[in-house]
Image (tube, rainbow, N blue to C red; front, side, top):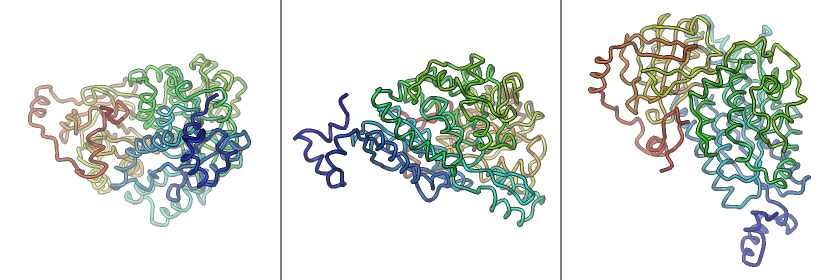
Amino acid sequence: MALKSSNVTQGVDRAPNRSLFAALGFTKEETDRPLIGIVCSHNEIVPGHMNLDKIAEAVKAGVRMAGGTPIMFPAIAVCDGIAMGHIGMKYSLVTRDLIADSTECMAIAHQFDGLVMIPNCDKNVPGLLMAAARVNVPTIFVSGGPMLAGHMKDGRRTCLSHMFEAVGAYHAGTLDEEGVEEYIENACPSCGSCSGMYTANSMNCLTEAIGMGLSGNGTIPAPYSARLRLAKQAGMQIMELLKKDIRPRDIMTAEAFHNAETVDMALGCSTNTMLHLPAIAQECGITLDLHQSNEIAARTPNLCHLAPAGFTYMEDLDRAGGVYAVMKELADAGLLHTNCITCTGKTVGENVAHADNLDPEIIRPLDNPYMATGGISVLFGNLAPDGCVVKQAAVAPEMMQHTGPARVFDSEEEAIAVIYAGKINPGDVVVIRYEGPKGGPGMREMLNPTSAICGMGLGESVALITDGRFSGATRGASIGHVSPEAASGGMIGLVEEGDQISINIPGHKISLDVPEDVLAARKAAWVCPEPKVKTGYLARYASLVTSADKGAVLKSK
């Protein structure tokens, strides 16, 4: 098999290239072997990435054991929790495309034969999956793993979503500063991606489901030694993928994306997967449709109820058998394409054949699900003609259908000030707009407002609708990704204070109950506000980004 790296390591014409490898300390024996790029997202600002240097060393050991030469280069990552609630959140989603672009540049510029991606948190995972599809050399993923759940003094387990809700409880007068401090000290007790089925863990689980990561990629806790063993196995397995010439686009087929969405619905993943899966699919030449997502949800029961929907955590899912155990339940019911090839070199069916569900309460069997339908619902109507998304697995039963008056805000900051002031009433529908991909720009997560609503005891009576997005830690009737967004002339920009909004999550409907002639008059009078950011990367991003229903990908032309 001709190695791609021969373009930089072989022949007299490439002697100058080899001299630079010599400058790096590589021997001829090393440069004659396959060159494997280790894309490591280690940094000292993201808890989910602080341990990735150890993962990278384990991967490199595995590559060397299997006869390759590992060479590490970095990828960036933002901690969404630290970026939350201020201008920093505008810079989170936009990094997905920076990560994809920069990794593509590094991989092709240096002619790597294969890649091992080491991501963990939020935009880092889909960004590297997008890059894998673009570069399309043999690639395998091994994440840093999830954080352990925290423990409060009274024995309750806790996590990041409880931390955010504690702030709402403080403003409601039901928790004092000492109580907030206890959450600070206990909510995030270890390295790793935050412990619930939030965006990072959702995407790491779906990486496993789509076939790009080994068993345990999504669930083995970050502090466990099993995570290091998995990393060594991934390092060895990349050499097998190279020998067999199995590439990302061989694995990430239309059927594999169907599998990923099915597992998504069963696990009760973050709504952000509805942005990331279409973006990854596009890089593979595949189009995902939000109507298709509802069809998959309709036939896929929700089998898991992890935080923020429930009070179980990623370590519990791992103990119960992990993603493969969930997939086994789905495969036995004929809900998966079992002949898809994966990074193991085997098919989905072969991978899950011997998986066991070790805890039928953590992973419910199909005849006893938490919900008869999947964890995510896409709503359509005059308020969102192109769709909007809600994590229905985390919605209180009494809010599955709701009609109430709109409380309208043109930014997250405006909304949070009113919420903390106690001026939101039971029954209200909070509308936060001009926070979409273009209008934000950057499509901020609304975890602070949703957590404040829940923390103040309004989670069972107040809905929130936005053209922004939500953290995977969000719970309640939180409906995001409204498309078209306000800044693109979407209907959400025409909502006025007191308008009645009707929500029907099981029926996949959302409507602004205002006469059409009134809406037409408002549309004629509407003027798009001045852009919030006019310089730098965000301004460039705003000029290129597409709608949330298309995955908020950047225009290619």
